[in-house]
Image (cartoon, rainbow, N blue to C red; front, side):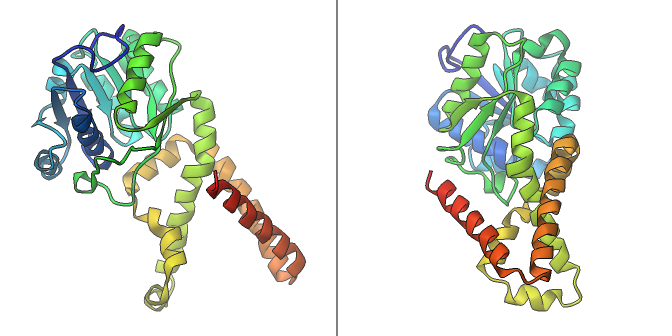
Length: 296
C-alpha cells in the first residue's frame, strides 16, 4: 500500500502481515478477512501450535518468518507484548517495503514510540501507533473473534513524522475491523489508560492473589459468587503482557496506584471509626457515578 493512499483496500492485490496471532492479532485477521480489504493475510508467531490454530480458523492464510512478512506485507500490524516492540521492529526494519505502513496494538504508547524511533530510524514515518480497546480474559488464537473490535474504540497516536494520508490509511484499516477510532497524544493516552485499564488489572491480580494465598483459599473460592467473578475476570489475562504494560507505564501506573491506596486508606479509617454517614456518602457517590457512566 502506498502511504499516499487513504484507503488500504484501494489497490489490489494487498497483503496484510500480522506479527503475533494471539487473541488480538488473530481477531484482526478474521475481521479484515470479513472486510475483504486484503487479498492475503500472513501470520508470524513464536508458537507453532498457535499459528496452526490461526490457520485452522482462517485468521491467516500462511505462517511465515519475520523477514518474509516484512518483505511481502503492505500493512503490518504488531500484536506482541510491548517489551518486544523494539526487537520486532529492529528485525523487520531492513526488509519493509518503502511504501508499507506499520501499526501496532500495544496498550502503552510512549515506550512503543521510543522503541519505534530507535529501531526504525528514518522509516518511523511509516509507523502509526494505535491501541485497540478490546480483548478478553482468554488469550491465544483459540479465543479470537471476528467481531472483537465491533463498536470498540481504537486510539490512534500519530507521530509528527507521519504524513496525513498514512494516518488516514491506518484509520481506515482499523475502521474496517468495525472499530470506532479516536486520536490522542501518547502522553495523554498513557495517563488515561493507567487509570481506567492498567490500575484495574493490577487490582484484579492483587485480589486474586490475596484470596489464593490465604490458608482457607479453597473454602473462599468455593463460596465465591458473581461479584468476585466479575472483579477477578481480568486476572486471567496474559501475565506476560500485563507485566510489560506495568513496567512500560510505570510512572503513570504508580501515580494511579498511590491515589487508590490513599482512598482505600481513607475508607479503611471510615470503617474503623464506624462512620456510617461518611461511608454511605462515599458509596452513594460511587454508585451514582457508575450508573451515570453505564448510561452513556
